[in-house]
Length: 439
Image 1 (tube, rainbow, N blue to C red):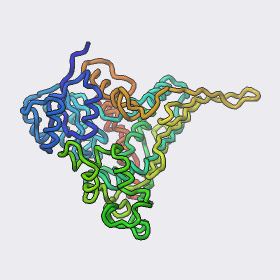
Image 2: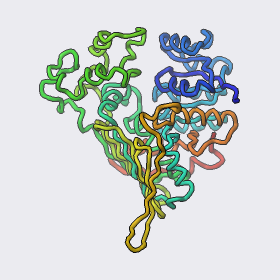
Image 3: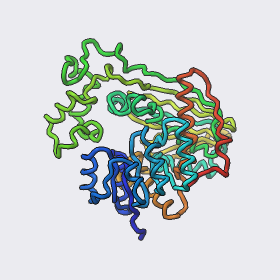
């Protein structure tokens, strides 16, 4: 039986606490660093943390001698690098939420410090650990479809996820979180594309995107500024805050009701009053959002392979799909179905192709014992714990080095969309073998 590893949560939000909860049989949470006194108190109570191990900031924690085996860093996007640097220098290994940087300069700075300190840093690209994507990657590694010619990936972001995160929520303005919607939401998908081409770098990126739908001029006639305050059409609106958050009180509770954390059991009246003043009660057409609601990305790799990602927000049904076409066959599937199809050319008379359907038998909401994201959350944490213990990383390993290509593609895509040009990529000089940092 493995000895439990000790960890400290930095940024006590939904994701970091979720990672900790996914593996409580293997870890012990012995510290917390968060600027919110309420969050510190809640975490201290939940995990039995000593008051001496409750810190207001990552810097305050880093000023102490090393206290735990590793850090779970779940701070906001723009805080990842500033909080990670002093803790890596203090000697902590780190599980770091994605995107691990919000621009290329700070990304390379973090990579350089990880190399210099020799610390293990895993990026939370949890979809690599979903049985669906892990099984597809294994088929690629086994050479089942030959060399990849083209990858087509899509992410359809549901209307309620779009509203809570990117219109009303924490990621609706780049001057606050400093991440674009592409990087905040679909860096998973860019990472999957890069992972499928692991070891072959991107060379060119182009992208187009904008906010097509959620603009002031598209507001329905008569719409108010706040759903539960001044909107006479609220009862007929698909984006009514009442319909999204009162009728579905648990769907995004960790975001929507954060202003009520000080109340042990908020009542329905508490929640309605909250929506009258909180960001989550705003009309989706009358917010201050400045991110896109859809974006298309085109990537060329060094070997000539091309790839596309289409991210569309405001869809009726959330979904992720992928289609890989190789020199010897193709793989196509959708994450939510937990199955994919492998096809090969069959030139026999009366035939055209052979087809194998791989059903991974992962059903329901795919949370279960291994957490969310298609069953990937718990598997991600356990793989990181294995790396700390010196075991061989799995095929899904999310080392900081192997996460660079996906981030580069995202940064270049956003530049392309803004500058209206194709962005060349030159990673070769910065990724020499002598400079690499792996798990």
